[in-house]
Length: 433
Image (tube, rainbow, N blue to C red; front, side, top):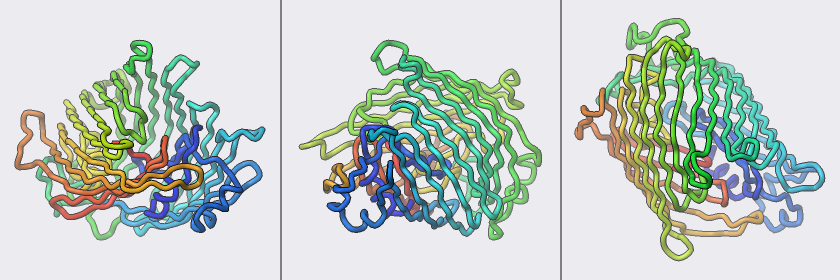
C-alpha cells in the first residue's frame, strides 16, 4: 500500500464491528473487523481527498484506493483497488461483506488482476476467499476461516486451504554470514492446508491451549528475474526438481493480556510453541520446531501519549530440512532492514525495542485518528544451533516507523530501517508488533 493508502485507510476504517483491511505476510490485502459508519451528511464535513475516494451506495460504501507497494525482494507495485463495503440488511451499521478487486503492475510479475471477498457472519468470525493470476508466473487461490468465539465458548477455530505461486523468493545461502553477492532468486509453488483449535485453559485467564495440523506440498523452481541467477544454478543440488511434502502437528500455549491485538497500547503477549514433523503426520522430513515469542507494551504520559513496545523472538529447528522451512531473519515482522529470508539457519534470535510517540490527533470520518512517530532499534542473528550464536554476526537495525491509527483496530505504518546493507522501506496495515 502507498503512503496515501495507508493514511486514508487508517482514517476511514474504524467501527465497532468486524471488518479490516490487512495485507498479510504474503503481501495480500485483508479487511479488519472495524470499518467506519457510512454517513452521507458526515461525508460533506470530510476533507476533499476523502470525499473524492468515498461514495455512498444503497446499502454500503465504495472506497477507491491507489496501490503503491514497496518490498525489498519484489520491488515496486502500483495499481488501483476499488473496495465495496456492504452493511447488514435492515439498516444496521455492522459490516456483512466486502468485495475488493484490484489491478496491479509489478516489474517482476507483470499485470495481476485479483479478486477478494470477505464475509462476517458474526462479530467474531470471518471468511475469506482470494484469487489472483499474474501475466508472469504468480497465481493464488485461497479460502480461509477464523472464529474467535466458536459456539460462544471462547474457543478459537481456524482453517485454511491454499494454492500459491510466489515468484519473489530470494536465497543467499545458509548461515549468519551469507554474503549479499550470493543472491539468487526462485519461485515457490505451494499446495497447503492447516487447521487450529484453541481452548481456554482457565476462564477469563487469557491462557489458551492450541493444537492443529499443517500439511504442504512445495516445489522450488527457477525464478523470473533475469538479472539474478536461479537458485538451482547458484546452489546446485540444494533443492530437488519435484514437489516435496511436509506435515506438522503444532502445539502451543499462549497468554494475552493486551488491550487490543492490533492497536496495542498496554499489556503482554507470550507464546510457547512446539512443531513436530514426522512421517505419521504426512511429512517426508522429521524435525521439531521450538519457538518462544514474548511481547510487552507500556503506556505512559498524559492520555497515553508514549508507548514503549518490546519483543523477543527465539526459534530453533532440529532436523534436516530444505532451506525454505528453516527459521529466517528479515522482513516486516523479523528485522526491518532486510528482505524476507535474508539470513537462514536452524536457530534464530531477534529483539526489538520501539518508542511510539503520538504527535497529532484529528477527528476525521467520525473517528479520531492518531499519528505516531516511532523510532526503533532491533538486533538479530541466526546460527546453526543456539549455543553457536555469535556477537560478531548480530545485525543491528536503526529506524523509524510512521504510524496512523484509528482505534480500535486499524493501523497503517511506514517503516524505514537501516542496516549494514543500507535502507529498506516496509509498508503495512494492522501490524501491532
